[in-house]
Image (tube, rainbow, N blue to C red):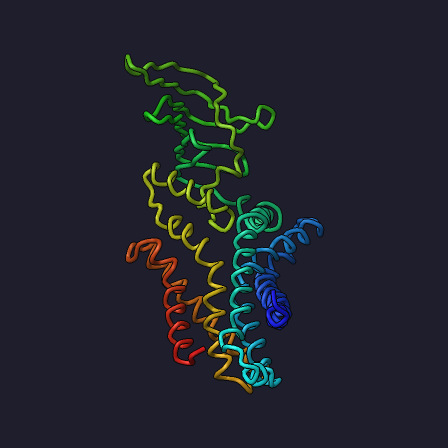
Length: 357
């Protein structure tokens, strides 16, 4: 690694760290203030609220990395021009691409780190963050009831209930099916089902057990039957899993599971592609920022900050449009997830060629 390469990387990494902290704090504070009324009324202990707030930081930090990368590119390149170093290096006979290649390679390294964070720290922290909100800080489940619902209790248990009361740990007219690859193996059809915290199982009351075998259906009535369903009431609440709470492998696995249960897996197929596309948006916005910074040249850091915000919002808008079109079936999942990267990457390539960088 040459001295010039280290110099350019240093010019890039300092504003990157500043932009990452600034954008993450702004979005974190905006989300916190939006929920401040609920937090103020919460009966959760202060430590739980503090833990909830802190666990949201890794997620917001990974989400704003492209914005911070663009800001760092604009500041580094415009500062390089304003200081006269650009003219000095040109006078020494250095090729123009030597100015920006170290920054582009550094942005690629940031992309790899973002991908690692997205697959390790961020999903676990965000899942815990969301769980604390639902169960401790703002437990909406306490006054919620669900009618005519279908619930999943793991890979091999599927429940249908006329009424599900999470707070009471009770189901009315539940039908529990145990599944295998060949289909339904057995059913518990009962009048009620109650969660037994001691047994950590659902206990079905006054019903019939049906076993499906090669000789047909065998029925056995019962007054009380301890089922194999071990998912507690809060885990059975019928909410779709958030892809941000899962790793790439988990999203792919869950999309297949949704498809097997007869649902549409498109949302999770798009999310799986986006989990790869989003970290590498850093390289795209960095490449786009290089010719823009050279066009701005003498601009102040305020202008660079405003330009980074404007371009980032347009980029995120493209990503959301692509995601919506992918979930709606207008575009294939991979096209929907990579559309923003492709459009902005092509624009960056054309601008770089035009400036003969």
